Image 1 (cartoon, helix red, strand yellow):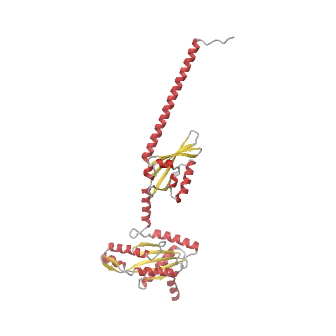
Image 2 (cartoon, one colour):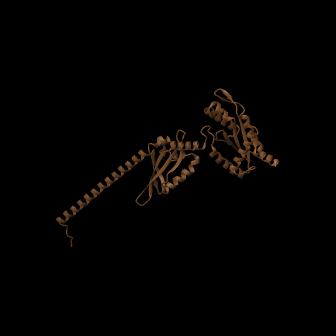
Length: 345
């Protein structure tokens, strides 16, 4: 028995249904295309916004959790000196720009980003011109519907100026503004460090308390500007008496201190104290006139005399005042003063 052929009405109904489905598919396609365009427009607006508020942006595309492509924005040239094309040709250029000592931390940060940790990080880079720059890298991860990170943006800000300003503020807070020498805070910090290292290696450290003789007369006769010029010259002369690794600091007024780690023995410290006295003998020229000063130096040895930094500085000060009392312009070891006191009992 033959199957009954569909009627004209059935065919017309089926055709109408197909037309409706085609119309629905065309509408969905148009909606998808519109959504894709809106997404592209949104991404473009997002990128323009990022580039307007930051120095430049790079984008890393991931596959199975590993980077497969990196695109650098055009502003990378201003920050790093390299073009986006140079980055494309050399995928490891970003790492070669990082100073050797900073590289482990940068690699660790990159691994943390791949794990989804969007933690900002600051580090140095070597600009193409050889200068050192400081940057802040802020990662912005992007995830798919399944919660898998498919890419991330690196927002780069050049923070060199602020870092240099911060370093200058720190320097000024730890150095004497007139002479450029370390101030009391930095001196005491270096002294504590020197004592800790000396204790570990079984070494001796010499501490010197230095006070100018007759400096008040310079201010009285020639004014404070002249006195400031003399203090700056004194600092230079004292620095000439010690090694580059040693420390000379200004406590304030006409009081200076010095620190010589690894001095070996008290005799070497005495030799340095004698230099300090001798180097002050030539006159200082003030407004075309010769001005003569002396210096009184007290010396104390770690660990022979004491082990605490505060005690050592106090003993060096006492030895310096013993020089003043004996007529000025000389040096004394604290141990000698102590021995004389014991002998007088």
